[in-house]
Image (tube, rainbow, N blue to C red; front, side, top):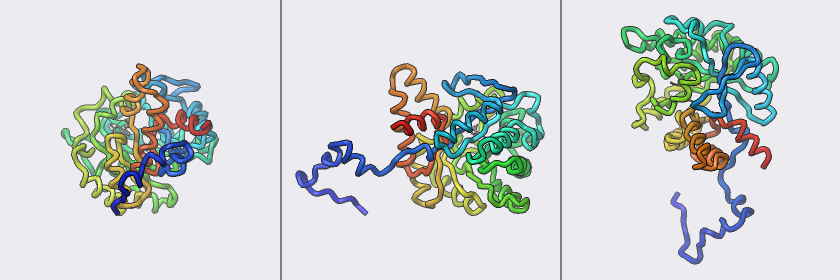
Length: 333
Ligand code: PBG
């Protein structure tokens, strides 16, 4: 449907922009703390935190401190928290066995959070990179990232997280067939209600740089992720991936990164009408923080604008490191 506009002066489009009251009446999208999933980084130890230099304002947290963060998030109205572990070097091996250790950092954090704040949804990341000696999301054999053996490992990882009490599993590895394999394992092990938010249209992006610092994978990564993550030049492939993941049993899908990929968010939402999320990734966070710390941008304003624009682009929610800061402002408004 083409919008109709009467000729000037019958139509003066500034009329509905003239006052805050009019603007609020015609506003099409809104932003609330309930739109956010908050990604946090885990580290071993007690009562500790370690700032991440490329992500000002973000720190790795020990499990006891992540429980406090989860309580705070819940009291701010943030519905979900997403866990990423910084794995110590001795737990990074060729077989990545730490990934499905019931006592690994992520699984301990899931149990501690679900114990203390049962109402917040805990999301996980499923990929081998925090446990792999070469920083890749899958097993590497003769220089190739192998698909099917990786999927078997991801299934073990998923089941350990479900067993620990995770509410939302986030496969971020981009292997083929992983959603179906994880879904059928969850069904047969009686985890029918565990949801999958698939990193479906995950692009091979340079905007993940600061994240790789945060989880200690930057120095470790050999080569690039171009044989499994998507080419930033492609659009049609994103739609095929979404259809594929939905058919395999994904409940929700994600586009990642966020801001440079809003066209993909809109297209996916229009084509499928399923719960659609975007990840405002570490590099997007770092950009906005760096500019605002230099006094070049108004930090609060660009933060809220960037988050609102995800909603306008069709997203139901956003994974964002800004979650608590944005929630505080929205709650005070
Ligand atoms: C790892 C993973 C990455 C991110 C989330 N999960 C990095 C990567 O694929 O190399 C990036 C998140 C961010 O940049 O904020 N599977």
